[in-house]
Image (cartoon, one colour):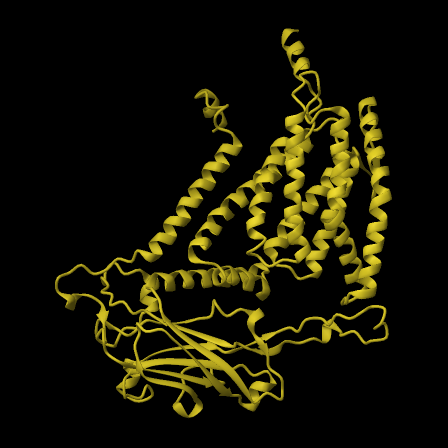
Length: 540
């Protein structure tokens, strides 16, 4: 393919970046087309409705809605179900909300799972007897869930003699879902038997030996998040349950089913229930139009992330000299990125935030080996680390770097030590390790922008920014502004959220310096070359 591209003269047009952009653009259009197809369902256009899959009940027919609580997860006889709501005047087009008190069986208070059975059946007919059982639709969902309790935080000084909970002894405890959201399709839809999608066949229930379908019932568990659950104590005998009903479109049911199936495939990949809960929260807490915009922005965030990593690695791989670059800033970024990663890990942050932080830490460690010109030489089973020699221009940059750091150290260390001492005396922590990580990360977040100053100082002394990886910087700048949007959508520690907005200021200062210092053709670029050197090589 590369030879064909050269023969066609497209070498300068077709680049790796342009190919990636085209692929991502195609992925965006394909995703939006898939979303559109979920809501665009082929309906029956035949004049004779007898050849269509049609509703069993009439449009204005009143039905029975029954809600039961049970310890059984499968369809059972009425004797094993405890009724908690019965609406004998149910209409699929009318929304309502009711609060009921549910009596808890003793077994549920000792970690046995409770299930809610929601049944829609013909008015006045029992769903447990013939013919009512063949004309009823039911949905069964868990009403309780088991969650690991959070580790107890306490003051490390005042509570030094307190017994810390052993994490290995912790076991999940029962939590109660305080809300139950029920939906059904109120539209009278006629389906074509030949073109009906397979997932719709799975959603609807057909009356035996007919082409009539029963009301489409959907119990929404996407909107019930773990952070909204309430702990069930052994002394609890009654729990309050808010039952909400509202009509829903079939397209929205298909979207929620597809999203639920996607979440199920993420569990084997190592995503915890908390991570999946964060993804659910995006659906629940976000308007549908803002949600579509969020998905659209997410594609660009992923694209810019990939291009920033690619250009950053390419810049440091081809880098021949450290002239104009602050070595201490590179070391600080490596240290701060590692601290942030361990802090997010200690806070059990979502993998959506944790995985990019881990990848960034690995790249920063590799950049340190390039900045310090480290070489790993194997002698048998031992490895010896050697550092390359520095040039006169690099020594000059190092002096500017050292000068800037000496000024910052008088301000930085008192602030970090004072913040750590205050946190130890007045803030609760889960352990000494948690205090150390929190103190370090607070120093990184609060005063991390100070470590950007040595690079700004070097730029000021050299009156140049030509040595900086501007392409990678711009991709990171775009991502930083996109992160401002995600800071309000994805759950993360407050200090990490504030640091996102702090980075906006840093990039604006770099852009100001780029405007302030004009291009000098005699200065070396990021690869240790200048435009004048290239012109001389061409003339020779």
